[in-house]
Length: 201
Ligand SMILES: [Zn+2]
Ligand SMILES: [Zn+2]
Image 1 (cartoon, rainbow, N blue to C red):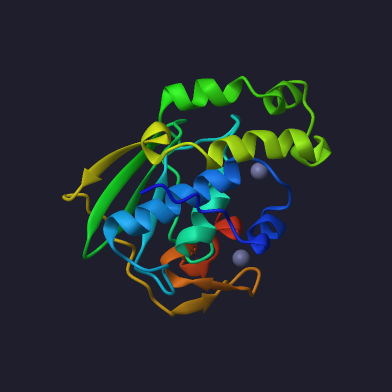
Image 2 (cartoon, rainbow, N blue to C red):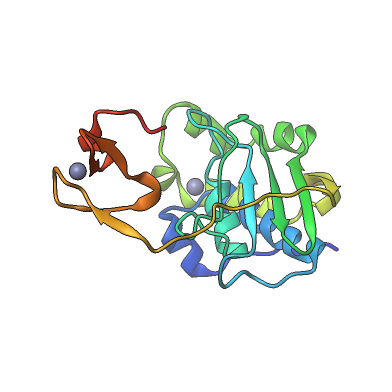
């Protein structure tokens, strides 16, 4: 399959700038849905585990993944592994998982485009001439799936999300609500984590 999977305009508005990586993540997400044979997730049954970390480029991919799949950060369907790799595992409880990796040769070829010379000089994507951004993005659209992605089926992948609960308590110190999973006890009274003086765990 060689579908370009060009993101809808609202995806660029949501993302905030034009760059090649949001569209790469979008394409990865669309391919993952097709591979697993599922539709864009409306509720809470599709998960993404991006292997990206922080303090490195190309994390924009994760916005495209969310747009494509509906597995969003806000629905708690996305959790980074912080491996610092350009890869992600996509998982549906009834379909298993699949891991997509950007091929090193693809990354190397893409890195030769002028877009990256601007980025390495610290120029933000919104400040890079549109023609320079479009050049690398169009090149990406024209690559084959095979040239871009290594695809590893992970039929045995499993993940158990935290069981949800609506129960909440008022913190005895600040009076703000805290969901019970996060309530701590201090001097025999329920408190929120910031009021507890304890760490997150
Ligand atoms: Zn971006
Ligand atoms: Zn409190």
